[in-house]
Amino acid sequence: MKILLSAYACEPNKGSEPGVGWNWMQALLKQGHTVHLITRSNNRTSVEAALSRQQTTPAVTYYDLPRWCQRWKHWPGGIYLYYLLWQVGAYRSAAALHATERFDRVQHVTFASFRQPSFMGRLGIPFVFGPVGGGEEMPRIFRKGLPFTGRLLELSREMGNRLASIDPLMLSTFSRASLIACTTSDTLKRIPARFHNKCIVVPTIGIDESNIAAASLNPDREPRFLFVGRLIYWKGLHLALRALAEVRVSVPRASLKVIGDGDDALWLKQIASDQGVADAVEWIPSVPHEDILREYTSNVAFVFPSLHDSGGMVVLEALASGLPVICLNLGGPGAIVTPACGILVDAHQRDEEMVVSSLAKAIILLATDVETRTRLATSTVSRARELTWDRAAQIVHSSTCLDAHPPARSAI
Image (cartoon, rainbow, N blue to C red; front, side, top):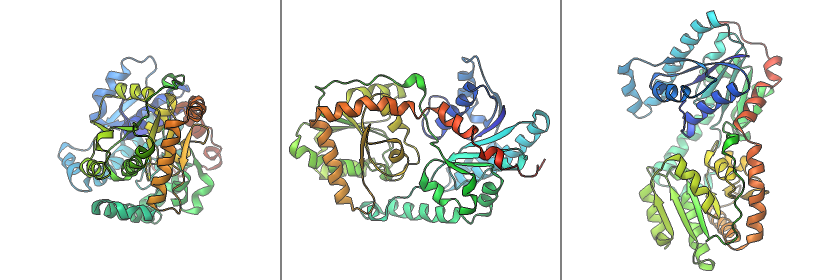
């Protein structure tokens, strides 16, 4: 099948949005599809360097707005205007390509947000929108302990989610899509009900089969725990730091290694100090991805109490490395982790104190109960194998929705 893939963010060896774009492209190639990628010009160097080492490659069209527009990305909220205009230009490039290439399908993968439109549905061929997320929201009771800017941002996010259901550009995107792939059931709920008959729920992230390793079952590990992610309030690290204070009462040697950078680093370090666990937390700035993969194999468990993550690539990487995960039953991580490979802490209709206490109990259990830790570790790899990029791409492109919903009239 000849697939046009729209990926604003697409770079090899990256996480987050760039990694999503790159890995979806690779998964489609592995399945034997002919892929034509549209991405930004400033991705060219890294994309072409990586493709030069591959036997099977896509055709690539690089498009970007004029250089003078790029300053907008540095203005508050300017990235969204820039992105919207890029989508308009990318569609025009796609329309010109389709006039000669005659693609079978078009798929939009990044940005992977259900609040940001794509115009690729106007090509008049089956259009896959997603997988997209962003409909996850932090339970309001957890906002009380956030910095003022965090509370303001959460309110803004909530309003954005509500507005998406009446935004004319989004309604047009949903209407023209043959298939809307949602990363979580939370995002599905944000899509207007009249479009639900062409929606499926499938993770936007996956793991490469080659990165899945055998579980390492060392019963004598020190009670060291790991967090990897941006140091921003909604990743929930402040909950883990408060939990660590409770853990240290019964497990004095328990420690937490934190890898990442972010705007809330000082706030989080102050919490560690206030909780009396500063000596038990090791702060490491962002490191190369290869170093992070090694870290997964030398800890007792991965702690990731994110409050509204659509994906959670680090959670999947931890499982693929044989490391049990402790997370909240919210968003992407809550959908990835099962009771067989980790501990899900209930965060619905519970206040922060209750959740912190439950996190502490989970950490203590894995620090002290070798049998439980071993049982969970033996299932992590099998769970990771259920969530590969290839499987996600197969689910999307084998969906009956693509046959059941005829494409919109061509706008070429």
